[in-house]
Amino acid sequence: MARERIVNWSQFAAAAVANLRRDLARRPGDRVLTALIDELRSSEPCFEQWWSDHEVREFERATKIIQHPAAGTLEFGIEFLTSPSEPGQSLIVYTVEDGSSTAKILPILASWDPNSAITT
Image 1 (cartoon, rainbow, N blue to C red):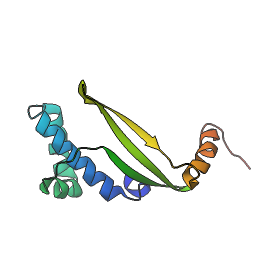
Image 2 (tube, helix red, strand yellow):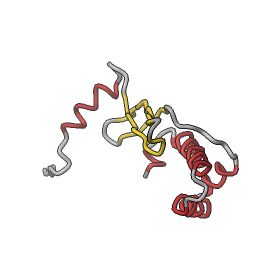
Image 3 (cartoon, rainbow, N blue to C red):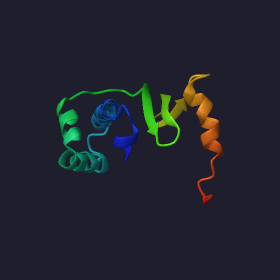
């Protein structure tokens, strides 16, 4: 589903793989992380390609562009904040530019009740 909805999925996913490589370098003995990486390498051709690039990246900020089926294109800035005292913990903050089409449509999306049924 993410591949269909995230317009810049390849760019975003490649950065996530580079971030996983950084995490593995910080925790080389982490069996759970190693198992996840092994599973992704064997099941996702794109993951294996990005993993073989050997890129290491610290996520600080990114842009995520989502194609919403009803609202259209939504663009978010993402900030990754890591505490110096807890480097394994991150706060991920999604932002939108004031006055942007995303900022205008978010209140409408937030008001939708996913449990209400529309009948004709």
